[in-house]
Image 1 (tube, rainbow, N blue to C red):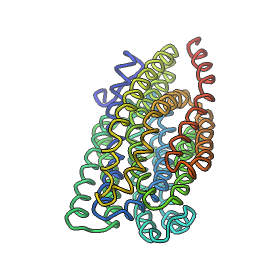
Image 2: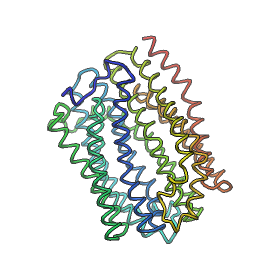
Image 3: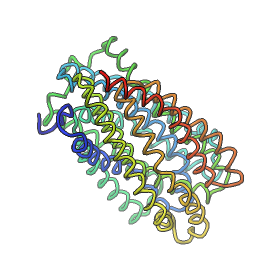
Image 4: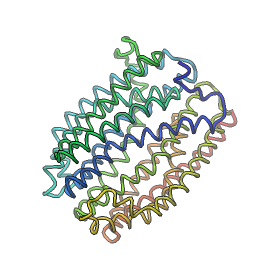
Length: 447
């Protein structure tokens, strides 16, 4: 088992964090490829309406996916504590309980999503000419929710034990499969948006199957026994204590994006298409920051479980230094490459309308990418300390201010106003969290 896990209670912080974050970073990038490939191919082979329709549906699906992954992230902190303390029996029980509850919840979401897709589109002020295609797309993508749950639950167990390479392998295979199928069905056979949605669901199913096979065969010590899947009220309560706040915190962000999407939709199809393109780039830019934050969380949780408080402070300091270095690097690259990046997502005949809007957004947003690096690092610290109330409050503050300033600035600044609103929200988040973080670090170091 040792070759498939990483014990962060021993060894230098920088080596562990980088080795943990790099595969996770690549894995998360590959996950984004599911939707990014669909977006690029839909924009180029189906047209501007398909690109805009997927952009409208994306925040809704992100809400579901991040809610599921948030539940698994919170449970993963609990599993990291068990791993650090050597309590593998408890880790397996937590894994089994998470999979049982997660599947029931995801099946319920799948049914609700199918039934209420038209209501969601009306609430988002979807343009009439896009409503039918957007409803079709979102209904089909909801079918993948149970597969997303299974993959994220098993990946959370592996990550709690320091293994991020296996999830990278699963997602890489699935992303390549998704891209190849999309390219053939959309680019060669010229099928429509139905195939774009179904290929994503098929790729999600493949990643879930691969995660199950790997865990059972290679890391059997983490695979739940039959008894571990049984209903356990005490375990369910603890899963809620860890997972529910994390799921809420993860879900708050896409709720804000859904509300912001409503403001973008009022600006017209070209603005919707441009915003869909640049938000994909935002996601890619912020993935390394989130991956480092996940490494910080696992480091802290494992060392808390092992009762090694002196390593908590050391690992957090190294993690924040890495966050800052990356934030500076990505800011410069995004600004320099903003024009060609936007052009990747649009047909040549749509470029004159869409590209200038996207470039204006990135001209401002590029210089703000350091801020989410800082907020992610601090959030990672509080998650590792199991202080989820702080993460929820800080995220709620950021999203509320972001939406409020989006409403104020967008009418005069267009989608560039959304970038400015993001900067205001991230700054407020840091002002709230940094004093609490400093106090918690002093206490941890004093123990």
